[in-house]
Image (tube, rainbow, N blue to C red; front, side):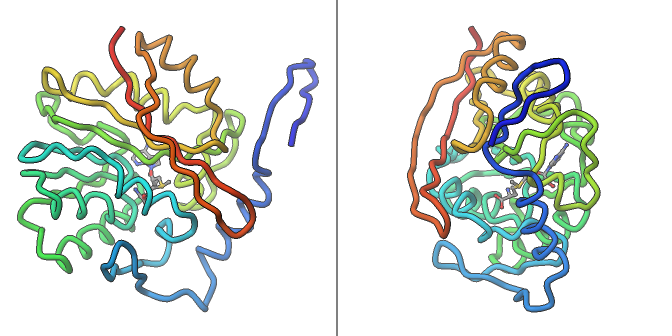
Amino acid sequence: MSDTTEEGETMTFKESPEAVAQVLQHALIGDDLPDSFTLLGREWSLHRGVFPSTLSAATEVMASIVPYPLGGSFLEVGCGTGVIAVTAALNGCATVTALDINEKAVANTVANAERHGVSDRVRVLHSDMYTELDPAERFDTIFWNVPWTYVEDGFALSTDLHSAVFDPGYQGQARYLAGAHAHLTDGGRLLLGTADLGDRERLDALAEETGLRVELLRRVRRIEEVRVMEYHMLELHRK
Ligand SMILES: C[S@@+](CC[C@H](N)C(=O)[O-])C[C@H]1O[C@@H](n2cnc3c(N)ncnc32)[C@H](O)[C@@H]1O
């Protein structure tokens, strides 16, 4: 779908924000929602108000293809239910830090770390991006399965779930890129999980402004209920 602003600038919404908001509304208050789900051969707790990791195949795809730093440290920004953070710990990361701006996601990730016996290796923080990290903390890999839906700056994030899906002005992704290098070890990797519904041109422009080069590491196509979705695992390199 495409729209033209008063200034004549063409905005491209590949997904209608209204349609996404409707799905969110159901995911937030639907009384038929289960309190757990199965993914990657494991059972996971789902707390109400947290991005359900089965809403699309994104979580499953990303959890399966993240190049986890074996024996190293992993930071997941925006952990949601905690599937990726817990999978990182189960797949050999020595330490995992998971953070989310949504307090309910923090509790959900704690519950899933306990459920899968990795609480000793998974630390969970309520944090807006990197703000609650010690400024000196460094990680071998930093990853975010981003809210890829572009909406204009000022778009109201009216529920916890809105920040799981919408990124007004791509400001969240801008902060993710700009702040990451202060928290990466020498040779550490900065990864970003997105999809073909995201605005890749905007993302590339943000990376350019931050002095980063974007590499497509993996492309995974999945047939979903309404269309073929294509997920992209990107790596950001210092130029
Ligand atoms: C697409 S969801 C991914 C959730 C989870 N990682 C998964 O794959 O199921 C994006 C997550 O980023 C979180 N988020 C959005 N803005 C954030 C911010 N500024 N700081 C921390 N987390 C944020 C949302 O609350 C949401 O949990």
